[in-house]
Image (cartoon, rainbow, N blue to C red):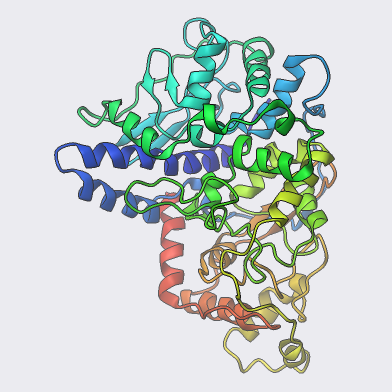
Length: 484
């Protein structure tokens, strides 16, 4: 089993955000480093996203249909074999993302996660007796996963999303333990020591962070009935999204100072309301907002995106490309439908926001050849062949731009990043073709990108703020930095 670097880079960037939470606490607690560390974190977040954010380079086929060598289909966590059930749960939790280094063996750890205070390395979670978790009892495993306390190490940095994993049921924890101790190949690999200097390397302050911001598993863990695949879809969906899937790690805003997620469940109005820029892409709002959320999507639309990487509204890109590629496409239809039902139950993050209505004025102007509006000529030259002059694209092939929730977000980062860097829709088990958008960074100036982005964000009834050349320059700089 191999995992593309892009997947690992996305995981590294996702984990880096969680690591900052622990790093912020450490820096605030020692030698007055708090202000310095936070300033450095903000600088690093803007200047050094993971390399997956860089542009697609060289000639690119727009459509490919190469054989898709997917791993065998996994059964849902039903049946009698705990190893089989645990393998499915590990896939649902995307555990391989953070615990596989570039070119390394699955789950052998060693993935470097850079932080302003030093590099943190992910743990070897294969059942090797000396360098992995071969000597872990179930209680040791449970303490690490749900409580953030590792045998022989002490408190874990919240790069391990134990605030979410606290909700995993006892039965599922035992199945995960069975899989990682019996179903994973042991790999003897000593992970490097974390590169955080003393006294910031002391872990006891992380216990304070955990006490303040991580829920007590004894109080929040799901019961066997709540976690069962046969549970009510809203209950099962909440279990997968809030807990094992740890979706809030990327899609929930975080506190500025201590970096904890501002919500951990659907009852919190900011939960899944959209996160920061990670890995060069901004995690979108997954709540019921009409413009930039999932308000206009049906539950089948959501399930289709998670299974195939595309739906009538959009296609995945950035970090979600890898989530679909390595995790959600393998979930059962029942679980995908449960996730969709739960997400559709979430109220809007911004109640009363404007509703999207299609307007054909932009299409009429383009059909007449009217390119007086800045960005219109660039759109016809570079975008209309795939996304069409009416902005509706080609369903499940080239996404619509009219009413696209990514286009309608207040922050234009993702629109700019797609134009500059391009992207690829992943090949999945049920959709084996890969569709590519080439990078346009090499031939469009900052002003031209700003103009076409503004044109798209204001066309066909879209109502999103204009984009400045200065903002484009900032996004371009981050990609250029990482390509070196």
